[in-house]
Structure formats: C-alpha cells, structure tokens
Amino acid sequence: MDTKLYGALEAGGTKMVLGIADADGRILRSHSLPTRTPNETVPEMIAFFSQHAICALGVATFGPAQVHADSPEYGAILHTPKLAWQGYPLCQTLSRALNVPFACDTDVNAAALAEVRLGAARGLHSCLYMTIGTGIGGGLYCEDRLVHGMLHPEWGHMLLVPRADDPTPEGFCPFHQHCAEGLAAGPAMEKRWGVSARDLPADHPAFDLEAYYLAQVCVNALMTVSPERILLGGGVMQREGLLPRVRQYVRQLQNGYITAPELNDLDAYIQTPALYPLSGLVGAALLALSAR
Ligand code: ADP
Ligand code: ZN
Image (cartoon, rainbow, N blue to C red; front, top):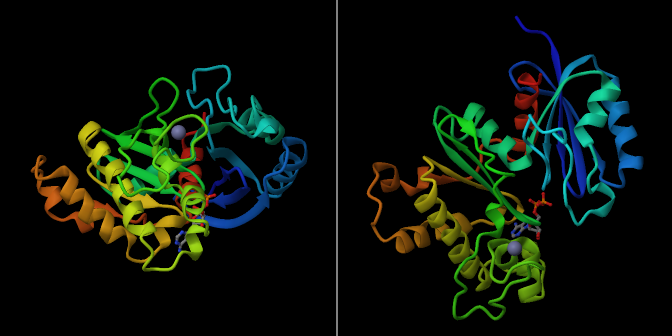
C-alpha cells in the first residue's frame, strides 16, 4: 500500500487552495490563502506544505503558464495581467524550497483529469471541462491524455456569434470582440445587466442569452474535438435551470448534424462536474502522482 503524502496546489488569481492528498487523490487536509504577491504568498504556501512530509507536488494553475515539462520555464506563470506574477517560476520555487519534484498543468486541465479519473467522466477516453466563473476556461482530456498543443488551448477566448438582442454584442474582453469570456463570464453578465450574475433574478433574460452563448461553446467543441463528455463548472453554472437551457440550445444549434448515440442523452453528455468545487485541487493531487 502506498502511504505516501502528496502536495496539491490549485493556484488561482484570487486564492490559493492547498491540499495534502493520499495516493488515491483523496484530499486529507486543505487550506486556502488569498493570492497577493509572490513575496507574500509563496512563503505562506511553503510553510503549509512544510508541515507535512510530502513526496511530490502537483500544481493546477491559472494561466497562461508554461505546462510543457521539457521547457526550462516549466511551471512558470507567463504573460499575465496579474503583473506581480508575470514570469514568476511558481513551481520551481516551491519545488526547490520543499525539495520535492513537481508536475504542473492548467487548473482546467487538472480538473478534466480529476473528472476522468474520479468524477463525472470516469472511464471515458475524452472529456472537455469548462469553467464559467470570473473567467471562462477549458481543459481537454483527449485520447487518454491532457492536451497542451503549442502553449495550451484558450477555450474561453473562442469567438462566438453575438445574438441580435444582446445589448452589448461586442462583449467585454480587452483583447477580442465577442469572445466567449467577454460575452458570457460572470463579470460580463454583470457589466451587461448592471447586477452581479449571482444576484440576477431567476426569470431575467440574462440567463437565456447566457445559455445560448454557452451552447455555442459546447457546439464548437463538439464540432472541433468531439469530446465524449462536456462538463460545465464554475460559479455561473450553479444557477438552477441554466444547464437544461444550455442543452436545449445545443440540440437546436447542432441541428442533428452529429448522430453519435451519446448525443441522444444530452443530460449525460453535458453535465456539471462531480467533484466541483474540488475538481482542480483533486486534479493537482493526481498530477503530483506523476511528478518526476
Ligand atoms: P472563479 O472563476 O474566480 O473561480 P467562480 O467560479 O466562483 O469564481 O465564479 C464567480 C462568478 O460566478 C461571479 O461572477 C458570480 O457572480 C457568479 N455566480 C456565482 N453564483 C452564481 C449563481 N448562483 N448564479 C449566477 N452566477 C453566479
Ligand atoms: Zn477574449
């Protein structure tokens, strides 16, 4: 029996979630800290992990980050608007201080991995995990491995077709007009309607428009990478009634073009993640198992 302990870190723009896990990816202890500057936050993380005899560290991080293990910058944060973290060698610093090897991936790739191994996509060979929260991001597990490509995919910035009744059809991304994040992340809903997404009343037209945009994301995924399952997590998806509407629009927009039997049951095809809100942290623990 493997009784070793593994460190898991889900690094986010607003908070760092730290965990100690066993070899099955079970989180035995967790702790969260606000994300301030590296000088402030990194020593706090080292102090937490130092209390436990961890043998490896897995990091699921906000992006963009260098996730290619053969790069000298592996585990570093890249060109982020969070300027204090730009270029910061997050994983290398923690790994050196703790004297353990690390493995690193994006938060959403880690979440996809966790859902495939232990959650709502168990046993499948492919799965797309999307988070719809402060931003929109996606992690793809495909043909039994996590997909990175050149850097890593930026699912949240795929361009969507704005709907004619959208009062702000250009969206709110500083880089692109009408990308998914700019049209459909929580803050975009707030800017469009003047009320935080969480506080919009259930019958507000915001949610029909939101479902339409998220369905476009799902249909684009279906047409490009053909995942066996799509999981939609994040704060916005906690809104009751939103997911069934997304499925309705997916049915309408894909319009019978793809006839795979999986699509006969959209309730199974598009689900919420089973491990939410711990998918990313559990994924980080699973990454730690593969650290070299
Ligand atoms: P993060 O992306 O920073 O990890 P979350 O995934 O929790 O954070 O997403 C936060 C966003 O989700 C906010 O914009 C918030 O308004 C929105 N949100 C949270 N709960 C709900 C809800 N029940 N209905 C709609 N939006 C929600
Ligand atoms: Zn964008």
